[in-house]
Length: 422
Ligand code: AMP
Ligand code: GLY
Image 1 (cartoon, protein in one colour):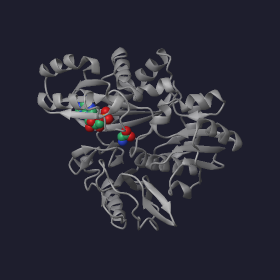
Image 2 (cartoon, helix red, strand yellow):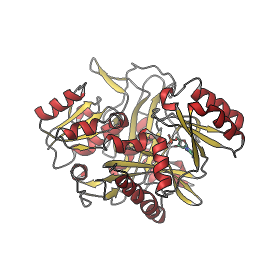
Image 3 (tube, helix red, strand yellow):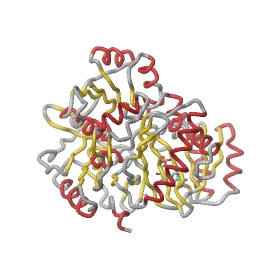
Image 4 (cartoon, helix red, strand yellow):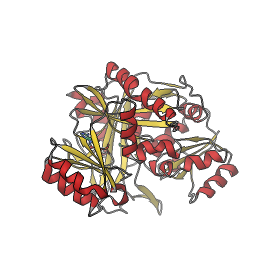
């Protein structure tokens, strides 16, 4: 079958890479893609919904895989499905699980899914929010309700910080409209982990667990980013934690979504805190994680495209893939300044000639006059993967590969994967 992957980041490069190994693939297109995906298929520039439809018809696209949340939340999957195109990714009303945190919290409360205790406030309720902040325990977490490119979360150590953040959100509008409503929630202690569930809305397959590193600096310091690196599997997700996640989180959420008339098909991403009371949900995303996908997919055996196609067409083929051990780590190299302002347009050197255990996933890269240059904050992800469960060795391989890569202002964390050894 012919497949179109939508997106241009490291996640989409990893999706295209995995799909390119599927026996069932004929032609692969990526829109807009990046220089990495150009090595696996054909990059195409498609601007509007109608153009997507026309492209899918003209190229007999059997499956569209939508990578990022924005088009899902805006209803691109609905539009294509309405026109008889098969899509991997949820409808708009199901993507709301990421699009509005208040909806995700409502759902979890209603169906008894473990998560942080919370209260929500509209910007018209500034006074109520202020008085609430005077009477609670700290630290506390304030979140914009809408999409804020992974940056809409502020952890506040005391009421002064919380009140200043409230002003930033409601008055200075640092998150724009996404911050017209906020969630104030309890701070959860524990270790984070990510679970990706591939689902047809009823049944599901869990991919190997992973752990992201959200902060810019070593030892989880500095600002939040989209993710600086990930490894898989995450030892904090033991067999018993995983079965608890299935029972108390994934199953009730999928059945809750059905009951709400928002059947979720696609990849449900559960961001978890493994607390002393068990796993609790920090957030849901309506798509694959980035960079988790770059660490998880190399460990998945079998026909990944078959898995996506079967779940997109109503009956997931749970035997399409399996995981037979092994370990993977992805370290992201970013442009200096990220997650704030950063420069771009620098040549990237050292991208080729790696052993088979290393994959260079492109994220913020672009081709210019035959050279690959930087074009985004997160520039590339270096993944090392092994058949054996030897994260120590995988780390060494990934960091060794990173030493060969060069671009002006290149920065990466040095401690990706270290938590696994605690
Ligand atoms: P989110 O965008 O919801 O994933 O939040 C970004 C990051 O903020 C998470 O990965 C956590 O590290 C942190 N965070 C969010 N909510 C909480 C919480 N309730 N307790 C502790 N940390 C949190
Ligand atoms: N790595 C976090 C995310 O994809 O949202």
